[in-house]
Length: 315
Image (cartoon, rainbow, N blue to C red; front, side, top):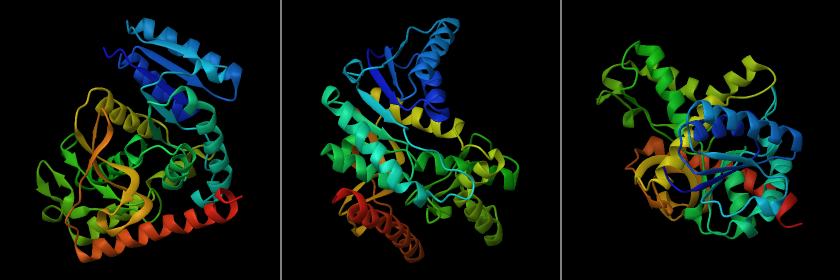
């Protein structure tokens, strides 16, 4: 087991599921939990600690009630923020969660200056942007979790459509974590066979549309919350790649610095994750239509960033 410390800020459904997964899988030596609800975070730490004993895991889970207790993390995951409710767009979350994100960064950065930060809060891409501006950290150390989740959703809808290949489906999604994400059908395969060789254009288009609405569908069904198992497990994969220096390629939200022709904007692109966080950005050879879709996705994020600059960052 890695002698590593992971911190999680925000132990709602996603944060607590992530903590449970990390602790019982014996991925780190210490797990630090932080939440504004003090009784709740203590209860979660106690419950998860008891689960680790059942699992014979050596991970020690602690609730941190003071900022100075939340320290020396190798990876910090931030899920803090208000959740999206039915009828609420990701845009509605923007200003409230930007204030929460900035406050969290200001509280925890002084005691975690060497940490790699994984952002899970929504609206995802703009929260990564906010965290970067609040922390002044290099882009390789502030990474958004969304692409793995969106790709997993696409894989599910592919399986739902064809009825076979579970565990052998590789789907790929780029762009912002929102309605303008870009599912890449021609970079998606079932046991190495391209999607368009297995399905009609109509079926592929249906999968793309379902992928874009995958999160909203769960919000609608739950009525009082949003997805948490798939987001938590997707975050676990990123943490494993970083702590174990796996050099794995995953779609993640990062600040673009010229890649795909964009500067100073966050979007989801394939990256290599290792001990330094984002160690390489992979530039796919996109078709013209995909470039247009990606441009639209980047534009949607830019609109939110502009609102953020006007109403929050410059105040």
